[in-house]
Image 1 (cartoon, one colour):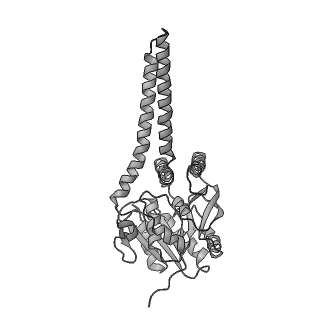
Image 2: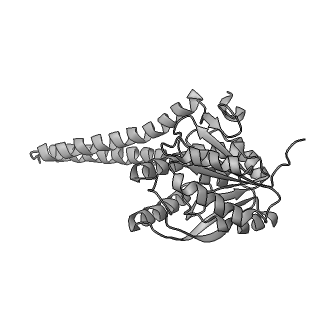
Length: 323
């Protein structure tokens, strides 16, 4: 006899979150056990080096609603979220980070909005506790810039915390990108989408897994995945520099013709350095897009599963692994 399909799966990526796995499970069960017709919690261990996987296995042994997936190595946060959605059995899927900054107690309101007809319900932060002014300012600036340069309506002040209904989940599973920006991908697929506003809490335990280097890389993935504007800026900049160069040549010729000349070492060096800097910047922009094309055409799996609580081996979704 087959196991009934749960109404809701909650996907929780975890990287070195041994202290948060247990409390996350407790709060999810307390918030959702009596709300949905069948609950599944899928923990995805993104190659942790602490006891995260041991805690997940203990929970799975004690609670049949818990499933665990462990990557063969660290593949990254977006890959972990994708693996959880791929493995989820529920009709609707919630994705939520394992650090407890996004409160599980918001999920019942998301479920309610989904039942009312919204296919995607995303959490929109009205406040972010325990974060520096620099991170708050740069995050706010990034989302507004991204919204302004793309043709996809990506809501501002949102993260990956959201619920997807069955149609949205099916569409999401078909998206093949390797350099993933999930909040943009979910916006791209369309369907009725609505927001639930909440206060993001301070991290309960442990340190952030998104230092400045990863934040910049993530921002680049978002921009290059959903906008060609940097390439257009490179074209416009090249055109502007060319116009300035031709004007400068014309001025020099005219001045030479009327007998005016001066020592031009400083201006010459300034021009060379300026043009060289512009060229290197443009090459760098082209390189960012070219690197992503190179990554896509290799068609390597987005992730590999090294272990799981239900005996799965390496999992590669066919829609993403087949040419």
